[in-house]
Length: 363
Image (cartoon, rainbow, N blue to C red; front, side, top):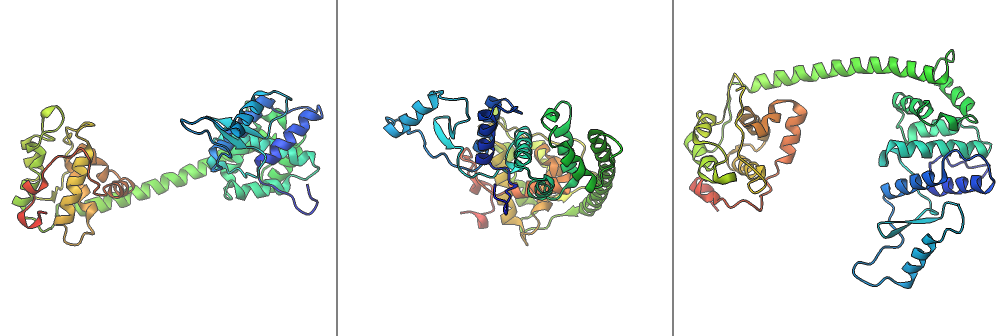
């Protein structure tokens, strides 16, 4: 490595080269070679890197492709090769590829992180810069989560046997970050995590209570509220009569007529006392919920005066229909439902909507 530039990234080609140096020098190998090769492959496949050679579908493979097939089969050494195949495609392990923690499984990232520490230590580089760099590069400055990660990395059930050479650098860095050095590094980190977790859990609980209180206040403001629109109550009942007039799963309607009449007895009225029992739509893969979602979205577009009250419609239906009950569960769930109700029509829908829409709204 250059004396003026040190690469603290967790980078595939560099780790492969270092591991092969360990094998060639007969030094103690921290991880089984086959296991580490698999780790490099997993990390590469999980990244956005493209294979350099792909398997042609339904065609005779070229001689170039067959060459790599043959090379992969030849065990000329115990070194980790500079390429590998996956599902017939070939990937390069000898090109620069920085690995991001968020793109791969934690167990895979943990092994790469461990070997990177050993690589830098073997080059005579103090690890303080690496720990500082990784804190922000892969953990976005979150010391609590970083400490949790290090605890798992060092645990007796993890990879602690790998770090006899680097443990002092790690302990020194932890002390600089405010860890107490009166206990072992494991106990210190565990105590720190427990303290932080406790305070974090308290803050989360307080925030959750605050959000719940705000949601309840918002929901209270929607009770005894009638959504105003362009349809009369009679036109609303006519439109949603498709729920019992059209056949759905097992040649039964989506809802019974008496259920539909109860829902729309007062138009789009959100009751003061939210019904405890919700009606279950008769849907299946042949008659999916998407049909009902389209119907509601179409109704909303025709009926809404401002087209800013989609959530009010979802709250109304959430009072009566099980499939939409998340609309009255929390603000987050209501937002999710509103985003997902896009008005996309199901290919399985065979309903003639003009039969139910007021004449002025028909295509």
